[in-house]
Amino acid sequence: MISQSLGTSHIGAAGELLVQYQLLKHGIDSARLATDSGVDLVMYLPGDREAFTVQVKTKLRPVPAGGKGKPSLNWPVPVKDVQWLACVDMSRDAVWLFAIEQARKYQRQTPPLLYWYLDGAPANALREEQMAEYRLEVVAARLLANRRIGREGWPMA
Image (cartoon, rainbow, N blue to C red; front, side):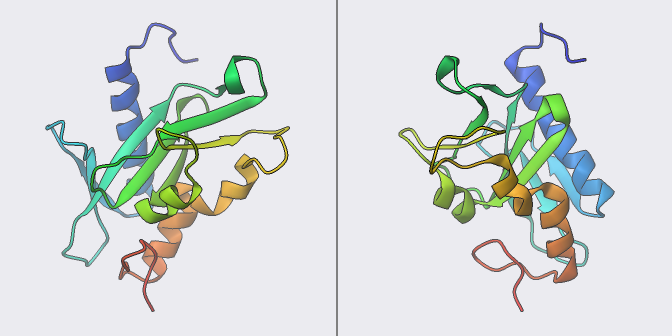
């Protein structure tokens, strides 16, 4: 059970730690940054000398779309230069990891939001099941299978 009294700084820190934990479970090192520069973590693939920047956005739980609609999740898409966006749903310990170009491909609205419905989505709306390929465990396996990351954030041949 998640405490209802958590402040935004605790929610954000918990999201960062969850991402770090899940990355570490897959053998990917990461480090939290103490500065508030828009970069929350840097991640390092095994055997790679380059550090990749990650911004983590965390939601406590899904909320009704528009205040009374079907359950949905949404996160702001960073406008600053980061290479990866990690989206966290704390209520389910769920993490999705997007190369920033991929997140921007799915963003909607202004300001840019990445959002989807858990179920019962309106026509043409994204559903969580469509985002399965971006679950952190899937992306981590793909990154580890081929350790060179291309500009789009996916492994290079």
